[in-house]
Image (cartoon, rainbow, N blue to C red; front, side, top):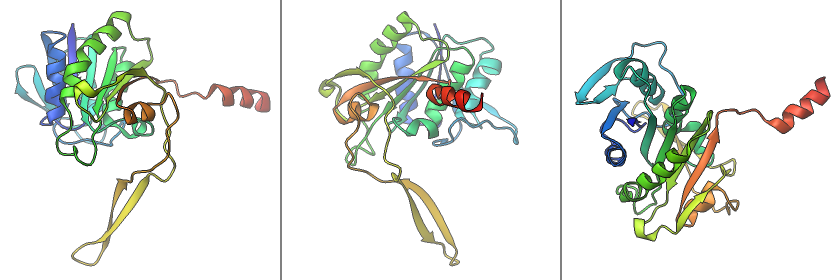
Length: 252
């Protein structure tokens, strides 16, 4: 099995090393093709107005001056030159659940793999205030290989990617594995941090704030809060079937 490993945190991210170790438990044909720099939050962006440069950083290891989406495309079409059997994206530093999936470059790389007809899995590690600088990377390394092996043995349906999130706890403290649906945060979970630079001009940081809302049962949010591994199948078809039928009736 040929595995393309990528991420959105960059070629030097510790989570990428974890993903590589996970991949090597599954195959001896592993290609690392990751962004040259941190691309967190770029979502499913393509580099169209600038040239894409690829730097070889080792055997079957390449850094791409572009987005995670670029990495998957370049990996398949140019670097490897053949279709991989699996795209592994991650392990992201921080969870990618609920609304995160629309912003995440980690998820986007798996989306691109899915669009290209390659089975794709996104991996993310949650952290808390105390573990922000030292997430429990051993979680993915311990639990991911068996999970991925089971998923790949059964097969992933065309047009679907698998989003796996590991809770903020030690591997032995993981309660269970749960198949979950995408959760939904309250609308005001984003915040704007306004500051003034040395010349008196305003500038801003978009950030996140914690909320105390109770997550829906069965959601990815609930699973992570309860120290369960969240496994969420995400489909690329964003059509709202209910609204589709209503509009058909309304507009004929």
